[in-house]
Image 1 (tube, chains in turn red, purple):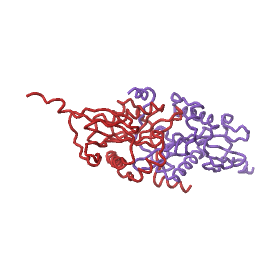
Image 2 (cartoon, rainbow over the protein chains, first blue to last red; image 1 turned 180 degrees about the vertical axis):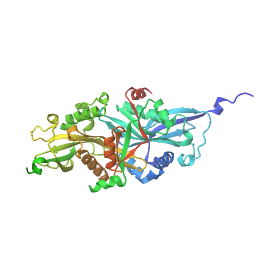
Image 3 (cartoon, rainbow over the protein chains, first blue to last red; image 1 turned 30 degrees about the horizontal axis):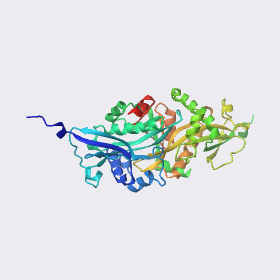
Length: 214
Length: 214
């Protein structure tokens, strides 16, 4: 018996990281909820399509990467995506077998061409006083479950880091939970330093609201 | 012997937290360096007056609290400051004894009236996807050494938290080093939650620059 041909076994996927459009908001909201489930933080989730739309797509629009900047990972299967002014990066992946994506209908193109959103990034500028330079803070970087461990996260993080470096920013930063050892190893492999000494402090809810009366 | 009068012993200080002006930049740069010394991070310090000026005071100016926002703590001794559109908050302190401030000449008013800068805050908006709301991130909050443990830090943090709450922001966040137990107790006393599980990841320097070539 001859071995199956490589062509029959491998699946080509084109991945585009592009700026999100207002019509992507429902997809982003669903992925934020999936992320909250993964991080065991659904009790903190209160985003709606309306609140995401008004805060991520203010009118007039703010400049990309110098205000809140949502990006989506868009996958195409039958032909490569056409790059636009909203495209950050496109690359081609070869998967060893087709992927079962139970949520395809919730994230897919209405054209029925299999194209779909498989992840997102939300980032915004931060500032380092030591460097006297803006940086980029990645609030979220998320790949939907069936598409993990294939390089899409690396593609997204690399694309964002490349953009930040090109913009002359001094740092790219993000947070990780200390029990998420897979993520930590992945980030270290990308060249990141993981700071063990810093702790995040937060005022929120009633602890923040009480300051209104001071 | 009659006890010394309270008037002779106490010193009245008016503290104003106000938006920084371009002419405050040399004061801010000196305080950033003092902060780097305290945090044992002077090897990361590369800010200059020129780089701070161009990044903190871009032209055209960006909206306060929705971009990088520097504030200074300004102390007056002989009469209260006159509030302006740049004033965030003014309050009066009664100190039990006069303060020796060896750096007065570096931070003082050229008018010789004793007025001086004793601290600063740099903050900028961040974004919570779970809340679908902007928040405020405090990059630095600093009081010069002779003026610590008198309530100025609390005054600054409260004023910023009040402003964030008034602006409808969902969170105020900042970082603390885990060995800085005094700061941690202070922040907890202000109502802050200190997160033990999150770690900051950073790409900077050559680890960031290499992504330019990808």
